Length: 117
Length: 114
Image 1: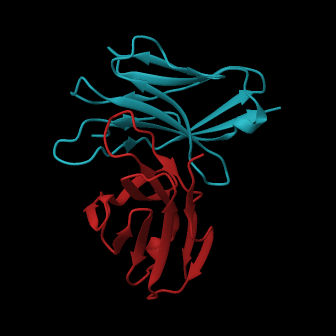
Image 2: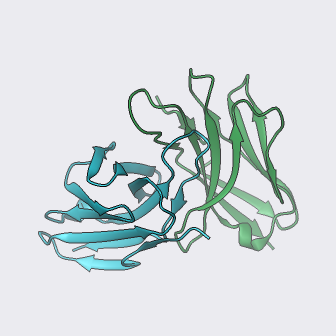
């Protein structure tokens, strides 16, 4: 079973509108971290935002916010006021405590976002 | 700023060739990772290393090997390249401990095996 599920292979949004990219996760550990990365067409993965499982408030970084619903095991990325430069692949990832080694993140399959002018 | 560099952005090799992909990070990170990225499949972990000369297999290690002789450098080796290894290869690094540790990625190497 996938630990990270991104159900939207592609999304379209009008410039200046807000968009939500979905991410659900599966873990039985109470302690975990959730990450979102952006990958432009150039290829480099860029870290956007982090949410810890014990954090009381939703994480925010500029135009990015993470809508964290712990009971539903969802960690959706919200991008406000979309810009053309937001067009990219977006990946959700989770890091759990290791069962016997290192902290290895698990990635979802990504969502391709296209921002229209 | 954290810097993770990869030796090549684009590489074209022939079937059967030995291929070296190099990754260097300048943040004194303990962990280093090699991923393969294919459309629709996301990132799949090939190998990772948590210390010099230490390595662990990821999800898809077959056909690959790695080397970590120095802390800052992690090499991915394709012993005998095959066409199904045509892909985007991403290197990443992070500090060792903690669920909060962010991974930092290199620019990626797009490998074409003919």
